[in-house]
Image (tube, rainbow, N blue to C red; front, side, top):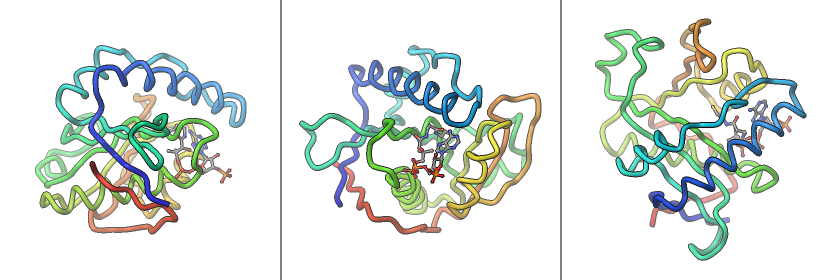
Length: 178
Ligand SMILES: CC(C)(COP(=O)(O)OP(=O)(O)OC[C@H]1O[C@@H](n2cnc3c(N)ncnc32)[C@H](O)[C@@H]1OP(=O)(O)O)[C@@H](O)C(=O)NCCC(=O)NCCS
């Protein structure tokens, strides 16, 4: 099934804030985790929009309601990545969210899309940080082919993972950039 991915507009920030709150409630209910209980600052999301780093996904057509978001940037967190790792060409995934109840499996397709885009720009690695105390989420990334690199227990989102940018998990979904 084909999904379309586009750069976010300022009007999308409200949707991303809402998804985060809905996801946090779902995560708390299902897994008892405190992940994302604090709302994400809208001004930081807006910065990602302005930088062209926040993406929005639609099923079928751009006029349909959006179903997912991903942010991809080059901001290596020095609390998680060593200087020699930060020197390597890499892209960093943040705020990956599939709207609760929509399109299970789409997240994996977005990770593949991000990896392809990163590799096409010469990056070697696709990296991310997962909620430190959320073992199920950490397992999810391991299942997606990511290797655990290290944990910073001082950080709520402090479990660092990476996989080769060229790695493709494969998915039912095709993600096309528009
Ligand atoms: C993580 C996410 C993008 C993965 O999307 P996906 O590839 O389409 O995969 P699914 O949504 O089908 O989830 C796969 C499994 O991971 C679990 N999972 C997903 N997010 C989880 C989370 N935050 N905590 C614990 N488990 C989680 C799901 O319950 C599911 O488990 P199941 O197969 O036993 O039912 C999506 O589940 C999501 O938006 N989760 C909430 C927000 C989030 O945690 N984002 C990651 C930030 S680092």
